Length: 337
Image 1: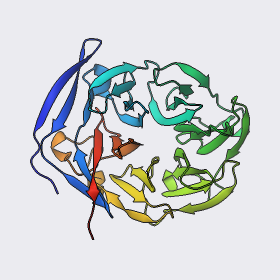
Image 2 (image 1 turned 180 degrees about the vertical axis):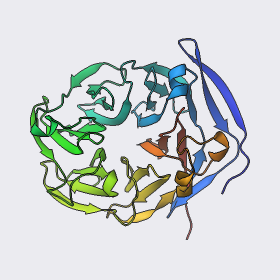
Image 3 (image 1 turned 90 degrees about the horizontal axis):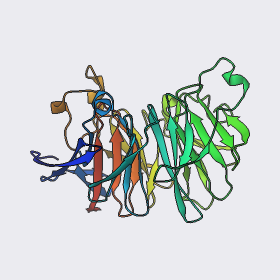
Image 4 (image 1 turned 120 degrees about the vertical axis):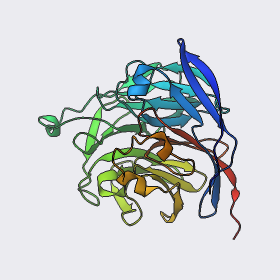
């Protein structure tokens, strides 16, 4: 369901460079099972800098307790901060040419980001203001004597201190570290449902009594699930997923952005609820994901890559497209049967 879009643009400045935010007048509603959302197309836009226009792919997102929405994109500065109303409030991060994975963790009442860079192989833990408090180096293991290392995601468990790093674009491995960054071991997928093929995103799911490590095994189009000690538990999604990138939870639901143009929603029993913004045919068009603007429309995804859930139930989806794309899905009430 969609109507004609009318945009109002407001200019903001990053070191003298214009950054535009947009508000959408019409209403586009998307639905998966009982969940209904108002689609806010181009909720905010990336800055009009050379690096953002040449690349600027929006890869990660997070919402901190103060309501600030943080967008991690491949340009300088890499981190863009917006209020819940979409106003630009800050930017930082000049050392992330390959800005990729982003995960928010809370420890002792404080919030931190785990950030990865696919180009310079950085894995860092930062404050929301950009102070680096920890670095995790590539483990010195046999796999890297000749194999590539290109980390895509990282996260940690505040209770045990365990840290996990996914080498999704390198040797397709997931590494475990202790609180201080000491190497503990590596998961290959062979102890589970099969050798990983691009373990792109990782996430500690706390919807159950015991936390579980979810791995978006994108090349195998499924989710592999482990306990935090590295023991395989189960795998699911091979019949429902095509290209899982990462995860976010809101209430009882798990949201999985799929690179091939849709957002999958699952319940607490790993059962598919439905898809939001399905647009798989766009992937078949030459030049995807960097299509001309007229092929990008409200209510349909192009290349979902990162995701975050806000405290009000809003879902923020960022896409792998030159110049970036940030979509906000606002709860529009439950569907009636």
